[in-house]
Length: 69
Image 1 (tube, rainbow, N blue to C red):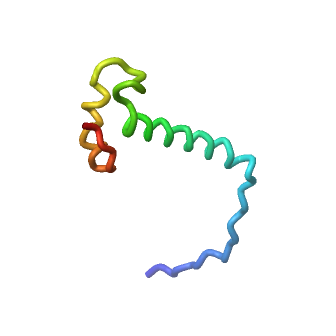
Image 2 (cartoon, rainbow, N blue to C red):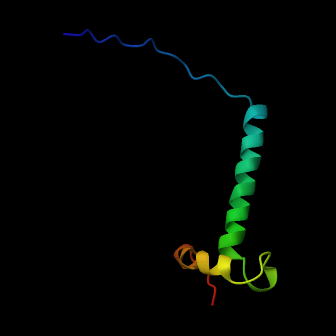
């Protein structure tokens, strides 16, 4: 039979804002790029010629409520 040993109560260490900020900016940029490709990558605002990106993300557009036709 084993004895259960409880760990001592520890408090979380605060993370400085200077360490969080680069990751927050990076995550925000990724989110904006994802929103652009799902919501606006077609027609006059298209960065990639052709309809490949549009067709690849087509069902996701409708699932998220972006009209595309």
